Length: 393
Image (cartoon, rainbow, N blue to C red; front, side, top):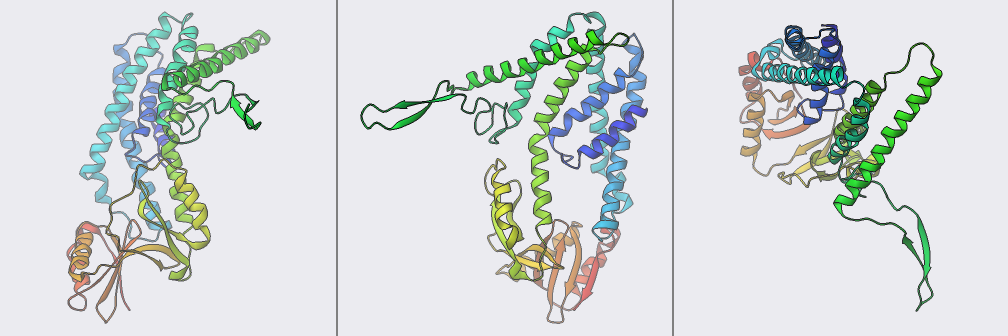
């Protein structure tokens, strides 16, 4: 039970960098189930199941509760927005996610039982199995990193290692120019797969030799080679799988920090790149650094947007506003956003101009037919969405 709660906290921390709906969170959930089995001292497979099931349920509900209360605290204390309604906790979405976490953790526990059985039967031979098979799994996990210059990942923009290996100069026989050439320059996919496997194999062999040297010097309690080698494999797999989601969160964090402004001319749209935004808006002084960060991420293309996005400074924060030529369209978009609980604040003027800020930072501008019409619409959805900050200028 304690292992379930500890891993729910670990997953809560990891989800700050790896979004909840991202498949990269899957290894963390599976590892939670594995550890709920590995801490038990049973010797029969069926004796693990009752505690594994109880731990998986506790893990799933604990993670959902921790996530909800983190979101509740952020909306209430940090972002100064209406607090998340408690009824969202037992809505369909959180319950489905909780069920998925429970199911995946239980499957991870079954896999943990299988690994524990292998360890008890082939304890003396597992070291070399991990040394030989571990690099293969690490190589497959490295496929999750693509178009990013990271040493030892097959799918990187530079095809992982080797980048250039050793170079030597040859002299052109006609012009006499010196030309740098690579002594060894593989190019096909299978060659890089083999090279990466060999590199990871060297890591495991060196780790094994180091453990052997340490154990010779230890007289009482020696290190468990199998557990350490398996731990190295887990770190490599989780690190490769989490790399791009963590990089994306890192860039999102810097984009948010670079949005301070005093007036609208301070803000500028620096690009359109998936998966960030069709209008990445930031302060002019930070535009160059944010552009470099966005370009360092393997974008899958541009996003389809209206093309009417404009930067605007709202409460000392650079935002995106949509300047629609049709007020009827923008008014319908605004009403739909209120109905879907995506609005956090509304400002109207006596000239019937309405400005609504969405939870994702986007601003929708429109004209209401009559004064206070937008307030009446917000009141209709108060029970569903909670309070929305409303003011008249």
